Image (cartoon, rainbow, N blue to C red):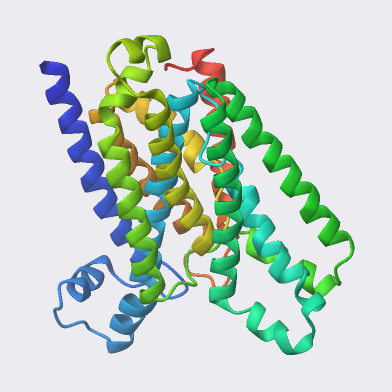
Length: 343
């Protein structure tokens, strides 16, 4: 009981940290805005400069919300994958969803010339990228689901996901080899990831997928706890392994697939956050872990975005590079420190 109270207090602190980090994130940028003015703007109060209010509402608030959705969604996806495969190095893209999304975008960018110049402008629109990315993820998802129906071994599904990732990466390489430098450059820029290019409408659509993915994840908490003790034990408790596996795959696909479609491929958040959260809350109970991971992912993503936007400078760094620079050393540190992951 004492541990549960301690965990609840830690989750409350993480939630407050999300709010504080979000306010700092919104206040910093090429134009620094005092946190007090940011708070006033969000509460609908008068702001010292009207331009600050415009920047906050139209640019920085959508970007901060996108960061929260991206970080929390990828973190929950990572937790689901690590529990499903009972593999501490599994991440949200272990099923090849990111590679499928990358293939869809690569076809749009580097295959646009195939359809002729008259179609190039249509193919390279914002929504065409989202649709292509989503279709790429869905194709890989359906292939993995078909495999999960035929296979009983969870590790075999993991290997199939990795093979699909290799296959799509090979196709992207072939497209890149035959593409003009300008189209290849566009694809490379997309691969950097971006949190600041979404309109309010796009943030709303992304939020719908995020909520659906989280609801399925929350509904799977009881089964996730039983899976930690092995599939045989889970079956003895009456858990339908195939149905549960399907639900987890769908939740991961909704979260990781939609995030990749709208924000591009974001690395290491899904892998690192669940392990970092376990350092704060050493619990195996997903009732505690899921909300903690949601808040932890949001905090880390907001922090990475603060670094990427280089406060006070007109320039910004690729968000994918920052998440990798922070996430990779964290995983290495945890491996060296713990020698094995708590799982």
